[in-house]
Image (tube, rainbow, N blue to C red; front, side):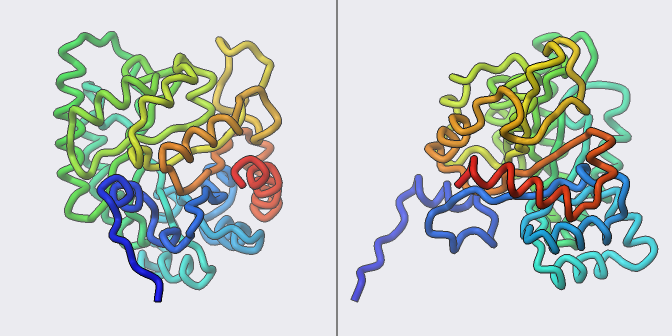
Length: 297
C-alpha cells in the first residue's frame, strides 16, 4: 500500500492558491480561461454557452454582465447556468480604485459590496482589482494604499472573496510587479493577493527578472495575452493586445518561471479589440485554445 506523505508548508501554501476544481490535477498545470471582456458585445448566457461549446472549463465573468442576467432572472440562475455548462468561475472582473487614494474611492467601495456578494453566489472566490490611478502620488499615499487594501479586503472577507491587485502599465500608482508585491505584502491580509497580466507586464516598466521576486504559491491569477511589435509601446492601448504567440512577449519563458513559482491556475484571455469582442464567443474561445494550449502545456 502506498504511503501518504503529509504536505510540507510550502506545498500547502501553493495548493491553497489553486482553484478547487484544479486541485486534483497532479501536474498542477495551467488551464485556458476565457475572460468575458473578450466577448463584450454579447450577453452573459451567449458568451458562456459559446465558451462551453469550445471546450473551455474555466471562465472569468464580467460582474456587470452577470448582474444584467440576474436582474432578468436571478443570481442563482446565473450560478445554475455555469454549473449546467460545466463552467467554473475561477475569477471575476473587476473593481478599480481600491488601492490608490482619490475622490472616487467611496464609490468604488460601494460598488465592491454588491460585486463580492454576486461573485460569491456564482461560486467565484476572487475579483480583479486593477490599479488605474492617474494622480501625482507621494510616499505617504502608498502607506494609505496599504490601509485602503485592508479596508477593501474587510468588505470582501465575509463573502469569502479575495481581491487581486493588478498592476497596469499606465497606472501612476501601481504599474509594476515590484510595487504590487510591496503593497500586497504590507497589507498582509488573507483576502488580498497579487496577479499578473502578461500584457501589462511586458509592455510596461516591469523587468523579466522581477518574476523572481514571487514567492512560491504567491501568484493568484494570470491574464494571458501578447504584446505586438507595433505600434511603439509608448502609444499602445488596450485594443492593441494580440493573441498569445502573435507578438513579442516571451510567454514560454514567463510560463516556465510561473510554474517554478508553483503557480497552477488560469491563463485567462482578456482582449479589448472591438473586432474580437464582436466575434462569435465560440470562435474566440477556439482561437484562444489554439493559441494558449501550446504555450502552457
